[in-house]
Length: 270
Image 1: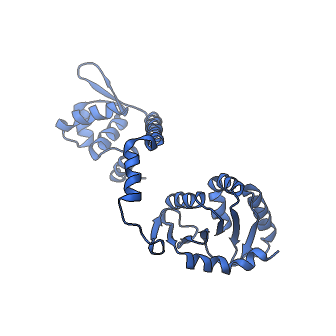
Image 2: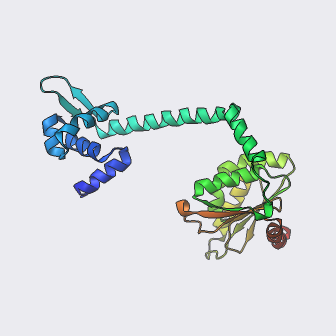
Image 3: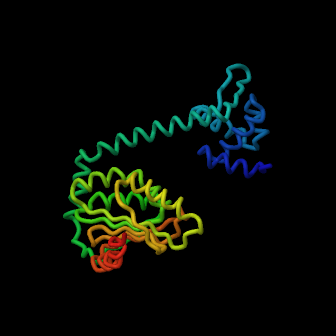
């Protein structure tokens, strides 16, 4: 069974409370309904602070004050609190998205664009490189790179990694193909398991149909994306890393061209 101190830490983290709020809410849950004095005794929170804490918890939907003499407080069910918090987060997220969707029309955004294009000295593309951490951030960066492709996109990935990206690759590919961008994809299969060829072939066919792009197989253990023989995104951690996933971006025509040249036999193979 989880210890009291550990439970306080977990409640504090998951429900966004401070230590006193966590202690008071837990004390009230164990009693269901209690006076300020009882709560102070059960929670070991100074009575002078319990009033403020209860007021804060009541505003956030964790407790309800029952009028009378003395005033008593009722603990709201954890399930109800959880739904309330989820609804609040969704509402806040929707409001934030609305703000972000209109920010491009604001004068301050125009100023940011001016600063970026005119306020700094141009950087030599060959000198540009950066590290991107976290799978979500990498996917966002990759999406931006691909959407700006003018001539060619080359992707080498594992099957599972490509499946995860399909939701944003599919609409991008559809648009880019219309614009005449050449898209090439290879799935790395360094050490296939015996007897897995049939399943692997079916997965490959399904993924190829989903993306609308022919997919080749390649026997190397690598994940990278090359755009227009100039921009390169290389994954430097194992596919299973997720939040520890890391990729390196480079703007290097020489390195990008070398990689795509190396892959030419893959595209020609039947």
